[in-house]
Amino acid sequence: MGKTVAQKHPHLSLNFPQPRPPDRLQPGICVALVISGAMMCGWRATRPADLDDHTSSRNQFVYRILTSMSDAEIPLQGGRTTAAVVRVGQTVRRPPRLTAEFVHVLLEHLAAVGFDGAPRFLGTDDKGRDILSYIEGEVPADLGWHNDEVLVAAAQLIRKFHDATVGLLGHQTGTPRRLEVVCHNDLSPCNFVFRAGLPMALIDFDTAAPGTRLMDLGYAAWLWLDLGDPDIAPASASQEQRRRLQLFIAAYGDEISVSSIKEAIVYRQELVAAEGEYTARTAMARWARHCRNWTVENL
Image (cartoon, rainbow, N blue to C red; front, side, top):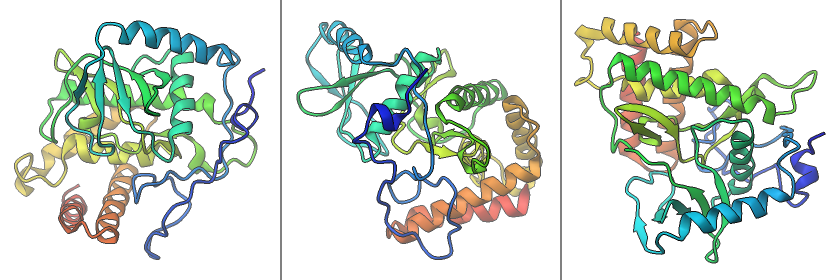
C-alpha cells in the first residue's frame, strides 16, 4: 500500500507561509497564483507503491543519459514564474521554489500513472537546481487567438491532467471540495508545449496546489480564449466568444455550465487584479480589471 507524503517525507511541511492577501479576497480556495505561495493546508497525498526509494536512483540514471549529450547551458525564453531556467542536453534546470517538494511528488505521481503530458522530475544537480526532462516543441510567447481544434485539444489535455491527479489526494469522508484535484493554477497557453500546432504537454508547475476543477478551468478559459482582448473579439463579436467558451467546456466534459464557468472566470480575474494591486503591478491589475468587466458584460 502506498505511503502518504508525510510518511515518505517527514521533513516536508504541508503549510506553506503565504503573505496575507487583501481582506476582501475570499479565503479557503486554491489561489496559488496569487502572491507566490501554494495553499497546502489540509490535503493528504498518497504516493503510489512504485514511487518508493528506487525512484531516486532510477531518475538519476535517466538524468545521466539525458545530460551526456551536452553540458552547455542554454537559457530558455519565457519563464514568467521562474527566472534563470536553462536547458542542458535533454534536461531543464530550474531554481527550486517554495513549493518544490510538492511539485516533485506531483511530477513523480503523474509519471507513475502514465500521464505523458508533463516533464519528469529527475532529481537535483550540484547547484541545487531541479532537473526536469526536456519536452520538445514550441511554447507560445504570448496570448492570442486559437482555432477550434487547438481549443479542444487544450481542454482535453487539461481534463487528462486533472483526472491523473485525483489519486494523489487521499479523499476521505468530509474532504472539502476545494481539494478536488491538483490545480496547475497557471494554465495559460504560454505554459503549454505545442507540436504540429497542437498543445501536447504542460510545463511550469510552480503554483500547483490542491483545488477545484472549476477554478483551474476558469483561469484556463480566460487565457486560452483571451477574453477581453478587443483584437480577438470586440463587443460586437461577443457571440463568437460565447460559442468558443461552450466548445472549450464541452471538450473538457464534466457537464460544466456556462454560468458556472463564467463565475469561475470572473473570480480568477478578480484575484489576478487583486494580486496586481497588492504587489504594485498596476499594468497587470488594470488588464485583469478590463478583462473582468468585458467578461461580465459580454458572456
